[in-house]
Image (cartoon, rainbow, N blue to C red; front, side, top):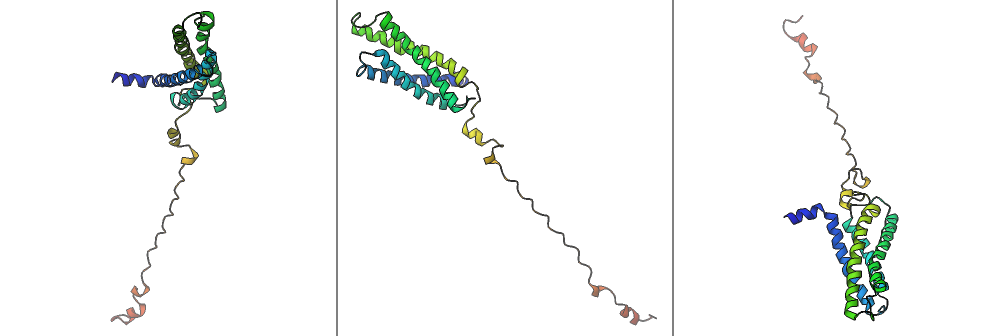
Amino acid sequence: MWVTGLLRRHDESAKFVVVGGICFVATAVINYALKLTVLHAKPVTALAIATIIATVLSYVLNREWSFRRRGGRERHHEAGLFFAVSAVGVGLTVLPLAVSRYVLLLRVPDVGRPVQEIADFVSGMILGTLIAMGFRWWAFRRFVFPHPEGRAPAREKQQKPDEPATRQKPEKRLKPEKRLKPESPNKTDKPDKREKATEPGAR
């Protein structure tokens, strides 16, 4: 099917979108859990905390699944760049919500509660998430996982012939067996000179 071929050609991007969807759900659940309870008066803070938690999940899923072949950097360097890029992504996520709340004043009591909640969802959860996802997609491939084949899967590493663990010891050559020398004819088979002397006619 054409869908299968399309997914194979855009394997990384498809997986990145799936991971983004998972993290979007995680962000929404955590955001509204905080917003409707302990951070009722601080929606921007609630969204920022939810995004940070989802970022940790994003790092694990993207590194081990979406960009599992990419690499080229040491693990601590890679993790530092990932979270630096993600920090910028957090800022991009909450920026539209901050504009909606504190610049456009789409909040109670200036507007009704339904308008405020719709504006929060559209600006923070949809617009902010899309902007941050586009930035992370570019930055991850450009800075965090720059080399397309930087990390080969473990099963491919095991198949490399030059790995010390997979080297086979050369078989010891067996020494060729010594050839048996042909036995010399028995001395008894030789005619005895004394027998020849007794033959008739011998002088």
